[in-house]
Image (cartoon, rainbow, N blue to C red; front, side, top):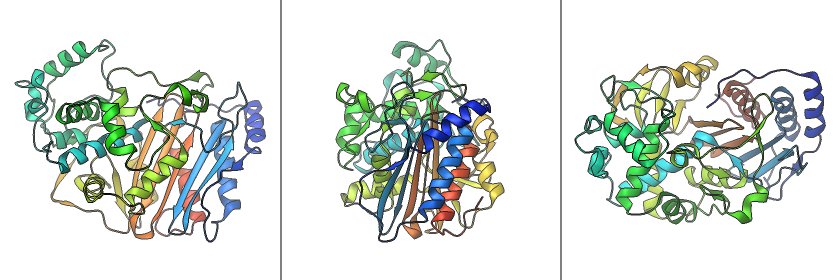
Length: 396
């Protein structure tokens, strides 16, 4: 996750404005009444000018239907436009897929949230991870796992050696430390418990049943032409490097249409099996209070109305980079119907955001192919919620 500051450049701004003018609307079921499209377009154009993102996809769902707005280009080198087939990296939003698979495994009885990783990965039994539950892994409350793995962890053998050596600097369940290794380990545990390979299990039990036809942990050759080129904050082309645990922690590539359908599944707008319904609902249940934010299984939520300050704190750098004291919710708390459930995500070349409000059956997804500060993404989200006349979310 890059945390550098975006650089302004007038020449690049002019280029971005020309790209923004290329926006198109993808073919999709339309709203009975389209939201304030001019405001959505204006917000998208301003975002692209500010971030210099070559391309952007905005997905919106209401009770009347779903719509995807596509802007700019998927690649500056080829000039190919963003469209409904464009694949974006979504970074840590991938974690919501991983935890959905773990929740499905728990619903089918092959995974116990209270168990330690060593129950499923024999190499880890007897290590300090015996103090850590799978629930801790799913809520960033392992006791202090780092944001990233050390650079010298490059193989499965070195990964297992690292986890055997690691010990929590704080008692598990006492602090929240945002960590790729923890959700990555949960993905490994889930695959072991289900007796399969992670990406294959994800296709079989999550993406295929949910009808996500263009969501991949391993992009097939036939889809490579739809894979957007990402760009760093200084404009260099880049794509995610699948290091150990990358697939489980930040490796999803998907379209705005598919990610929006994933939101619809969480909103109960798609016919699913009772087991899948229970699994997705379980991921939204609050387990810990971390400042103004309630930490569910990867998902984060805020009761509405939510203040500008609380959103800024919940999505700020300190919440990502520093330990945050937490309070265990006993019993765990189902999010109020009138709440904002969110997850941000980024790789070195992309930025994404998902948010939905169960009581309104409203949700949105944002996907851009240039890395940028989370705060700018939140501004765009708030402007789109304002265009939908959503109350309780601060408007810009």
